[in-house]
Picture 1 (tube, rainbow, N blue to C red):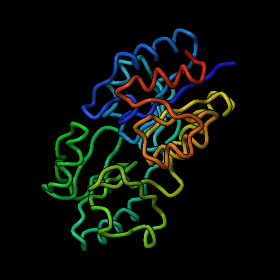
Picture 2: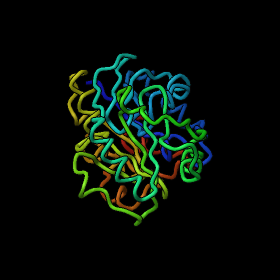
Picture 3: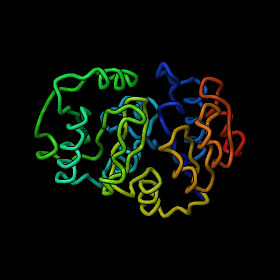
Picture 4: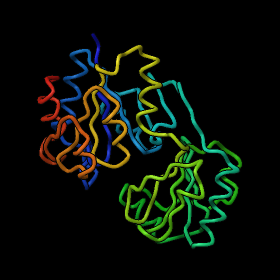
Amino acid sequence: MSKIVFFDIDGTLLDDQKNLSISAKEAITNLQKDGIYTALATGRAPFMVEPLLKELNMDSYVSFNGQYVVFKGKVIYKNPLHPKHLSGLEEEAGKHGHPIVYMNESILKANVDYDKRIADSLGTLHLEHPDFQSDFYWKTEIYQALLFASEGEEDYTHEFNEFRFIRWHENSIDVVPKGGSKAEGIKKLMEKLGFKMKDVFAFGDALNDIEMLQTVGTGIAMGNALDPVKKIADIVTTNVEDDGVANGLKKVGLL
């Protein structure tokens, strides 16, 4: 029976300096040689992961926290945010001085010329501050927005229940459609492949990985994962810098 392993990127495959460990790359190559499918499951946009996909010889992924799913280079599922809902969120966020960045599969744009919170947050992903475009979300499908507000500044969850808000940085929150998650994206891909969930493995470390690790047959938390992630995982491996991916694969018997 075929198996598949999903890998989160930041904090799982890549360390704090955004370096891919040699052991993780070798482990993924060995999985592929053994006929085990490998795929990414990330909050990042497709254009952000193309170099990593190439380096890891992968052509399938779940991106935007489940809103854009690709199998063997072809899009099989899209779940964009509604522009009218985004317009309402932008109006409310503007009252509190919270800028927003909007992303489609190939580019990102900001609704302000410059904001230090945007520069600092995206800088951790080695991305530059995006250009300003006021009507971007009206002219293209948006699969994820980034709302820039510090913890405790404002709670948008009650007023905007058509969205799901997931914090990924001290100054930034992912905004995806209600019910959207990596887990839902994985389900769409499993329908395509005809796999049973018991044959699905996933690695993660952050809040946006919780549903994924709970849904798959075996959820593996990195040693550097947040405590809520470790609590729900089936297995906890070592830190990303300490061969966490390779050690986790050994623990579950895939290496």
